[in-house]
Amino acid sequence: MDKIAELREKANKLPLLPGVYIMKDAAGEVIYVGKAKALKNRVTSYFRGDHLPKVAAMVSHVDDFDVIVAATEFEALVLENSLIKRHMPHYNILLRDDKTYPFLRLDEREEYPVFTIVNRVKDDGARYFGPYGGRGVSKSILETLAKALKLPDCGRRFPRDIGKDRPCLNLHMNTCDGWCRGEPDAEEYRRRIGQAEQILSGDSKALLAGLEREMTEAAEELRFEKAAQLRDRIRAVQEVSNRQNVIKAARADTDAIGFHRGARTAFVALHYTDGDLTGKDFELMPEPLEEDAQAVSSLVRQYYVRRGAWPKLVLLPCEIEDAEALARLLTEMAGHKVELSVPRRGTRREFGEAAMRNAREESLRAETEYERRSKTLEWLRKMLVMEGPLRRIEAYDISNTGNFGIVASMTVFEEGKPAKKKYRKFRMKTVEGQDDFASMYEAVSRRAQRFLDGDEKFMPLPDAFFIDGGPGQVAAAEDALAAKGLGNVPVFGMVKDDRHHTRALTTRDGCEIGIQANPAVFALVGNIQEETHNFAIAYHKKLRQKTIASGLEEIPGVGEKRRRALLRAFKSMKRIREATVEELSAVIPQNAAKAVYEHCHRGEEDSPDGEETL
Image 1: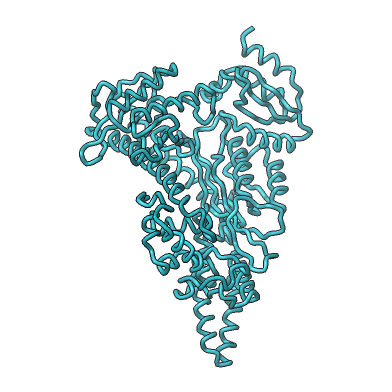
Image 2: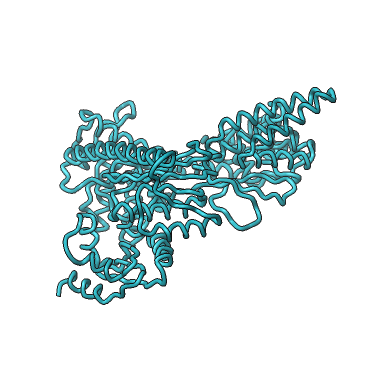
């Protein structure tokens, strides 16, 4: 009996009950998770008749399956969601698991509460605002609020730091009220924080009305300086209110979901607040194995679980089989009723059409870009006379200053795009002195060994290695791979011209492969070389910074934060030693500046890294 017949026979014995099925390959890895109203009907369908190419590909890898019977369709939905999140199966449609939606956290129980950026909401008694589109957006919101309300953003903490050091430049630039002086007092500070909360909660109108009343009262009492201050704050709050879309998106009452299938399938969520479009999230992924309704259901679940915020109404692009169970799941997670609807007419239909239009445009744009990258990789493959595909390229570079801190960088390009999460870096362990060839041999050898050891962070091997350097570096990399029994992976060097620009690719025997005649290939290789070089330099600088910082570690009152500030400002121990107390005081508090100055002038031998510049 062949494998498909064997699996079909096993599936025929399943009950006609709701549940989850888990497809596994020959290695026992979970490759697909699905749910069904009737397990027998759903699972047997995979092992009879013809299927679309994506489904057929999945079935061809199935060696066995397990099922978990559920009491209800809702229970099956929750279980499927949990299993997909745990196993991240290859054939399930998945949102990127590395994307987070930050929140602003405020603990009002503190005497001087401060906003912080966090990745998830906890049941800790604090108040949370968001989520927002990214940490950059969150930082921009906090900076805008601090400027509008003249709150501190210097990193000092109160009441701990009140009166310890003189006020920073923010007071003199009139962007902060100088809370480090102890005035205004804690009561006024909390009042300003309350105003920030009003803005984040969308209650700017009430805040502005209150400030205008205060301004009028101050003017009537002839307190003109106070009235002018309130006037300026009203203008600042109005400016924040005019830039409120990013904040409103976190409180959207309606989300419209768009979905478009293609070579790059697009999922879009448009956020509407009081009928106004306030934000957009989208994600691209390979064409899903599931039908549209199944894919939409799965993506909506994943999106809201990860986002951590739920509107009152979600407009879907199509009818889905498990709408009732999904609405119940979202309602339980949100803590308020979440309605799912497929819009038919009026404003809701316009919102839905806008989401679908955005999904279609994102998919077509990505498809065009994907086709362009694929064509470029095909041209490069032909230039290199490679038989197989060129989907994954790994590139390596060595960075050092003399014999100090010799490091290697490993960058990864998949389908012509940098896969930054897969970048790796090495600090040389066996090489003594400056020897680029030996360093390259060690780096590639260690990378190959990690692959042989089954380290998932070094899986799979690339289709080609690109080495920053000429024939000598290529030979070192090839020898390292051959010593590990992996000599079948091709290696090419990226050589530069006299102006340090990418010129060509080369083999170990010095045979150069010209790439300048093809602008797309030339740009791709140049980008790979530049990215790899910069990654190596960044790691090398980080090691140097740590080394230089060690010269400051023994100074009382100079912790990690102040060491970093000094290094950012002066770049080297030599420049720190040459600085006056006044120059040091512009970066760190005066008492710490005096300690650094006295330490540096006890004797030059105390700072052996003086000549090293970042």
